Image (spheres, rainbow, N blue to C red):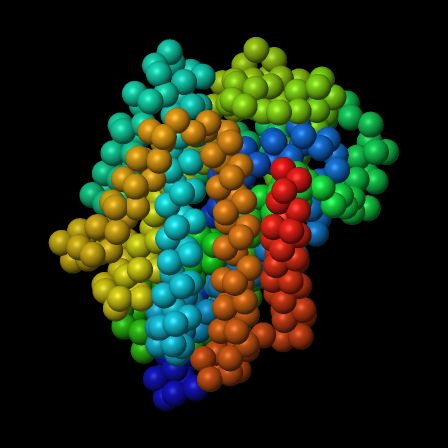
Length: 435
């Protein structure tokens, strides 16, 4: 590690109080962010999985937890150690032949995902107010863009992270539906495999919406933003990470991902115990998806579902377009920080606006909102495997990470996640004709 790195690390060790405060503050946002990670694409995918296959995909929540926790921690570690986002690291240490395809894949997936989430917010609002979905699309996109560019993303995230917590209602709904717990436990701990194309597509969608490309880039860049908030303006000031900082990041990602998967598990269970058992195996609208909450909320099921979808959607869209902007800006060497004013980072904020507007335009093609959410997750599932491989290469590179390269356990979990996602994607492609 360079002298600058050592100097930076020494400065960090001289701030034990601020480090402790940062750790305590991080626990709350970590838990809430984990819940909000169940964005509209995730809720739509999990609801579709439970409605279509009953309890058969519950085991994926158990399997993916350690994998996604490790992957998110590795992304956080890259940001902490390198003092820059993932695309910046690729630009500095790797060929553009690796950088540009990785960033292009992310931008495509995120823009489609953002468009699907904007459509989902409009569909959820339509459950509350009798205004056509298509009429609400433009105002929703403009509000999100205005707050993100000229306002404070931290303010909107605080408000809508709490709204997203309404998704925990699925836990109560699943319990009140009185599912056969013996069958539930078997499906949870005994993986169920089917070789038909529809099941494999659903599996890829579940993996794609839980281990999503935008989380990789966002996590690393947010660690950089936290460093900037602490006054470390230059890369050399941010390089290097103390043991305490890495442990704090690990606890934060582990706790956040646990609560994310808890919601993920109970959304599938609630949909399986309500929609699937009543024969509603093909969810085509937000109103149908809301029925999974009826055992808990009764006639207010649509209200509860709408609030959760609106909250998680308003949180997810800025994250999706923001991670696009981080990646493209870092790849091109542009200034990029949400702490900057629009005039200080015109390119960064222009990318946010362009990504949001392209996503908005997708909604005027007549695509069904719930179907769009599901297929967005499938696209993420196809793009994530190569990006995961890139993350594993970076985090195992001693020239980049110094003494903070991956240990054996991290390598096993990280490469297992990569292999699993590659296998699911390849299996889906090979059985595509069975759709």
